[in-house]
Image 1: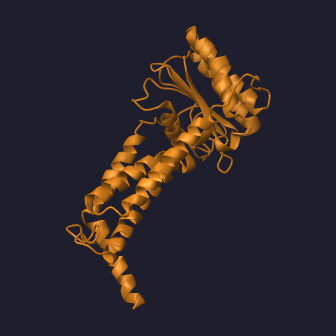
Image 2: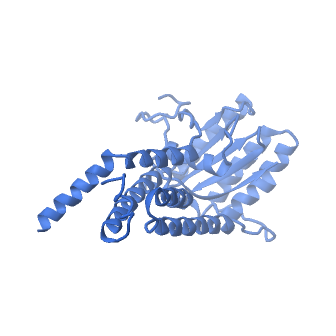
Image 3: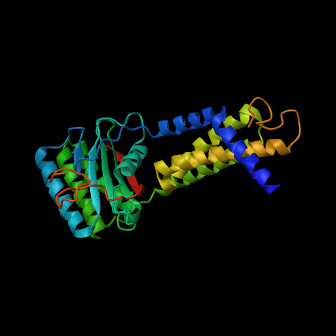
Length: 306
């Protein structure tokens, strides 16, 4: 009896993946990957000035200082300037870059990314989870306000980046404290993600009881709304995998509920939908090479403009 039931369940899942439901998995995948579609460049060095706002002297100086800082503390700091955010928020872009480059040592997650988009006049300090206690959101906000923004407003991009990087290193060393008039506003971002996640979860749950195509639409809307919270919790790669799994589970449950229920629809499946070098970042083992150490997505930070 149980064997027959298990075989029936396996056949159901097999049919799910073979038939039209695969279209909705593809649709969900395309939608979620579209959320994070920034063309992350290949990791090449600690300071990547793709926007062309820094002098070679500044890049050389920062490369040397950041290399020494990592040698002393094991913390990894990267600076990236981009000519365009490609119509995405700087928060999303920084997370995508952080995940792709795997900044920070594995199991320490002690990386920092300073991202600057001069054309949009946006900047962000993204902080790995392992450094949130040393480089708090309040400190990141103050560094943007007091070190980066004034220089950028006056057109001194070199001076601003140097001051910002030095302040980031000082904060991690415990030598940079926020002033008393700084207010932590990072909680609003977290609350927004949590609220969005709750709404998404509710939509996904409700979709179980909506028959036919409407239920699938509700599922997709719910998971898309839930997706930012998943990214914040586990990074974009695992968030996408979990989102797909949730969708498949919901579709399976909808089929189970539909079979057990009554009415002309018979559930979603009851109708037509049946069941290396000194200046490069590489993976080389050379003592002069550098690469992301395997850290996961950023845990905090602050954004600003000028």
